[in-house]
Every structure is written in C-alpha cells, then in structure tokens.
Amino acid sequence: MLDASTSLSDSRDFGVGDNPEWDNGGYKWVVIKGEVTISRLIVKGEGHLILTDGSRLVCSDGVVLQGDGNSLSIYSQSSGDQEGRLEAKLSQSKYKKNAAIGCIDDYEVNGSPGGMGTLVIHGGVITATGGNYAAGIGGGEDRGIQPNGSVTIYGGTVTATGGDHGAGIGGGYGGGQGGSVTIYGGKVVATGGEYGAGIGGGDHYRGGGEGGVVAIHGGDVTANVGIGKAMGLGADCVAIGRGANGPLAGSFLMTGGKVHANGINFSAIYSPDIRINGGELTARGHHDVIGGAYMEITDGTVDVEATDAGAIAVAPLGTLNITGGNVRAIGGSFGAGITGYNTVQTSNIKQCYINITGGTVYAKGGSEGGAGIGSNAKHYSKTQLTITDGTVTAIGQAGGAGIGGGKYVEMSGGRINETQRGPVFRVGSLMCFAPIPAPPACIAPTVPRPCRGTPF
Image 1 (cartoon, one colour):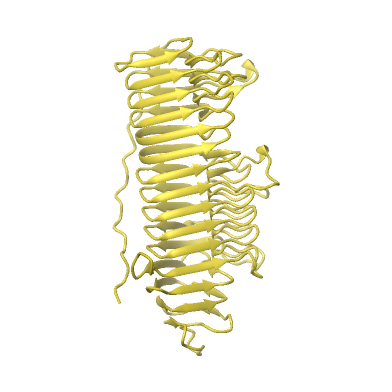
Image 2 (cartoon, rainbow, N blue to C red):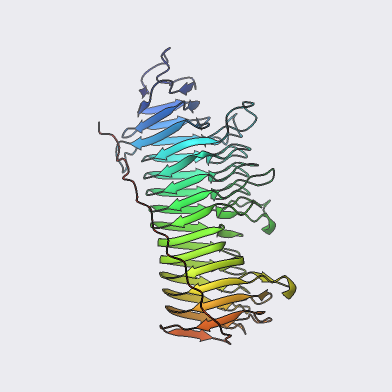
C-alpha cells in the first residue's frame, strides 16, 4: 500500500517522501490512500492501481508503462466529489521527452523495448500532460503505442494533453503511431501539442504519425487538434487521426456516446476507414472536416461544419454511404457541404462515389458559392451521386448548385441519379445517373462490462 503516513522501506511495495522512483515489483495490486507524491511509477508485468476516496497520487516524472507484457489497470473506489486522483505532468520534468503515462523516449534507455504497453482505466480523475515531443498518454519521442498495446477507457474523467509534437492520446514525435484506443464510457478530453492529433498520431517529421485504430462506444469524448503559433495550414494534422503530415492509416468507429472533434485550422477526423453507426458526433474544422477513403453513416447524429472548404469530403476513388441517421453538413466560405475530391485541373480528376439510401441529410454550401452536394466554388469535382431513399435537403449559395457544381465551375463528368422514394428539396441545377448498392452496415461489437471498483 502507498500511504502518505508511511516512510520508505526495503520491500519497495510503497514509495513516499523524497521523490523516490517506485516499481510494483511482484505486487499486482497497489492501493493509494491520502496524498502520495513520488517521482515515477514504473510498471513491471501486471499492475492494478486503486485510488481510494479522497486520495491523490502525484507522479512528478510520470508513469512508465513500457513494452509488451506490461499492463496497468486503474480503478477508483467510487465516483463523485471524493473520487481518487492521479496526476502526471512532465512539463517541468527532467524526463521531458517521455509520455506522462506510457513509454519513455527512444534515447533515455538505448535499446529499450518499443512503445507503450496496455492501459485500462475503469475510474478516477486522471490528468496526464506529456513532456516535449511526447504524448499525454502513449508514446515518448520516437515512440507510440505498441502493436499489441492499447488504451481502453471504461469510466472516470481523463484529461490527456500532448507536449509539442505529441498527441493527447497516441503517438509521440517521429515514429509515434496512434495504436489502439477504445472508449466505452467516462469523460475524456484529449488535446494534441503543436503538430499532434488529439487522439492518434504524433508529428510525422521523422516517420510514423499514423492515426491508429480508434473506437468509441460510449462516454463523452472531446478531441482537440494541437495548435500554436508555429502551425501553418500545411501541417495537416487532425483532431482524431494522423499527426502532422502523417500517412493516411488506421480507422475510426463510433457506435455510441458523444464525440466533439475540433480540427480548428485543420480537419477533425481524417482516416481511410470511418464508420459511424450510432451516437452523437459534432465536428468542426477548416477543411475536409470529416474525410476518408471509405465512410459510412448508418445511424446516429452527425453535425459537421467547415470554416473554409468542404465539410464532409470523400478521398479520390473513395466512397461515402449514408444509409440512416441524421446528417448535417455545412461547407465553409467556398466549400460544399458534401464533396468529393476537388482539383484545379480537370486532367487530375479522380472520381468518387456518394450513395444515399436512407436517413435525413441536410447539406449546405458555403456563402461564397459552394454546392450543397457537389464541388466547391473554385475547383472541379467528379462525383457519382446516387439517391435511392431518405430525405435530402441540398442548398447551394451565391450561385452554387444545390446538387452539382460550385459558383465558378461545374462538376466535370459526374452523374446524379434519383430513384428516391422520400422527399428531396434542392436549390440549383442538377445532373443525373444509376445507383450503386451499399455494403452491409457494420455491426457494433459486444461491449464488455466494466469493473466498478473495489469496495473498502
């Protein structure tokens, strides 16, 4: 037991006092009572940390969870005002390139095992602020979450903030892939440092930066892209997905809960595979606020707004299938509400596919001439749009079509076909074509029952 009233002993089953480092050794279960401050908690093997009511554990140099085979589960005795707290803030630490909870940087221990192990949070108030170049929860510099590692959150209140170039939850700078992040409940706020995703990859500068596999089945989740004076629009990191200029990799699945994805000057969610099968998603950003190669919306509420370009954007040769749910997509200034790949030259156009077979869709172009569904005001788009059912409202502004081209250009070679059985309202010109069947909807996985804590 780590207890504020106890001094150090040779058994190393607790640590208080003059900032010692402590590891769990052969102890699988550790109970925190009262106020305890240590330098670092180093997890070896399987570890379980219980935060009793009113307790507070401060790890001034972080929690080290390094490599395959090492795991940490965190529990609180109860929820509410007395819920136990864990604080790891490395902004002033000598280990300034390490994650607050996760792995060390590549240079601290030469040849040490790769990324972060397995973290499971059942409860507690967890605050994790990564060092420079590191994630709040996840990877240190040149590190991410191990392929066999993961972050799973069932409950509690988790605030994870990346240092410069690190993700809030996910990878560190250079080689920091996002790994597997799954959320079933609780309140989570994840904010990237400069050039880092809120949840996903760290800065790609020396490699890595992949978005990882993100699945949200419940809870209240806020993901904020990193922003700072050094960030230009070309950095192209996102709230959920890749770090700055990272490769398009990973996936995003949502079956429940609430998600607030804030891309600010960038995108909110950008991934090759996006599936929204339930819950409430609110996404804000500059351009391509939600974008990917394959996207499906089968249920839930999706509210997307851009400040500059397209709101929902389909990648070249990609597909968007809307079979249900309520979708609201508002393009920024010259952008379309729902758009395909846009280019300034017709010779570079690559077709994409948008299929609406159900649900309620409201798509509005930007005030400077974007289409409701189609191209933006300044670029060409080749989109094959199929509407076979549902309720679709498509509004273009300032000369942009409801469905079709933007103010200055038309869709180049795209087609629109309507065999639609529900009402359609549109403003602007139309073009028309043959339907493409939608793939079966993704089935949400069985949600494990979370641990509710240990009674005392």
